Image (cartoon, rainbow, N blue to C red; front, side, top):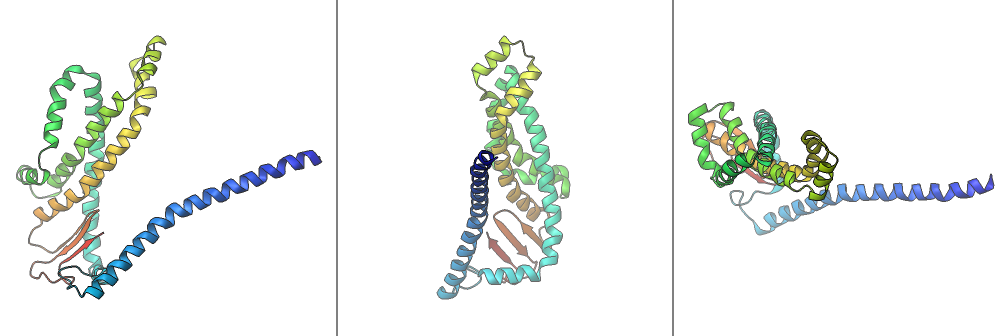
Length: 253
């Protein structure tokens, strides 16, 4: 009995230390970015006030937050459709881009004929293509969804192809020696290997997709009051005034 207690005590102490270490890591990963952001905002506020910068040059964070609170209804009303369009285009890009990436991986003819064109289309300036989608699909949600899909599509395709081709050849030879089917190789070997690449492509797609939805929303609703939201910028625009941070506020976050 005593020996069991002596063995249990070090195990309990080890679990307690591991639990405290896990809590410490989680706290550090959570609080450090928050504290850094707060410090940057404080430096921004003090710098604007000390330098005496006009709001049209660089508004202070306090003025930005005040304007956002005043315009909160307009902000929420325009944030919902923009977010839905972005998510819809992103989901479609993951599905369609992933399917095309699988086709390019398994078909030599498709890869030789389509992959160079995929790379070429990715080089097109996306903002220049936006008016074409508006001419084809109108200025409603259809054109914004199509542009969102167009932006997020290519990183998904390229990351899927790279991930599926990154599978260890030794494991593929082992699967062949075990007479595994192509479906088994895909779902149990190639797909798990490609997930890190696919997740990186998804992060890139979402980063590119969000600001582009804002640009398209600006083009399709030019001339009416609206609020634009993106991962890098929030803009509240009005038709008649450019006062900052009154009727036109740009927030760089």
